[in-house]
Image (tube, rainbow, N blue to C red):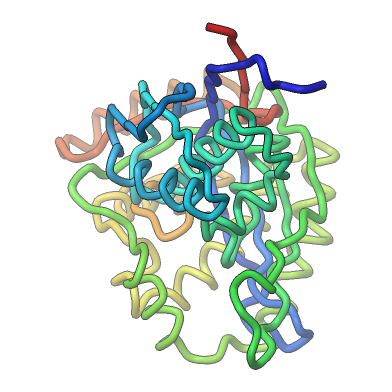
Length: 330
């Protein structure tokens, strides 16, 4: 169906957790490979409409403007768009805000100008999916997601030649389970050039440890999700968090990027919480509970224990659907 008559597009997408990489060695020709979860919140909402000039308003406007300019120039589009950003996902917090912003803007421009692009193509054009495909799959499908990492780069290849990490498995996250987010507003996670430098200077990841983590994902995390076994799922995630966190420690200052969040996660371990960790480069931490009552009870205990004003808390659930795209004729 042609969308030529639609002149306004609203896109709502949500944050994601990246719970860990499982092959940072890359000896089999693929590197990274990750597991993550689409969340019900925090969310991002933007509206785009056809316009004679490119205009962006709202939070993250400079970032959004650069993305829109890149796409319009690539396709040599003379008629531009006006973008209003009503709500954003916290930036550089390990929640995938950059990918969601790029995909939402790309989706709006794609529909307004009938470019017939896939989400994967939008991701490539906007430079997303360099190491992880979790945010891209979250935008399309939602749920608990496992990607297969990137193919090893071939000498002479360009960024455009390299495909985004393929989605290997997708599971509906249990409706009753709840995710507690622990946000530290006093610092940002590693990103951009700092992230590239970090990966460049980290040592070779041990091959036997990569194999160990792959086994945790394939033979523990994935079956646990099918059987709705949070304890077993948590054991697998803890294996990823501990080994990968320690590997990244020289770059981020410890197993977890934020000392404030690290203290909370240490306390959660003391309490016997099955599944917890840091999302991506942080600083946001997370914990998973079997129901809302358990999550609320733990949150109240944490609020009494930790009085740091930079710490913020949010209880959400998994999101088992992709981004919401609404078309309007104005």
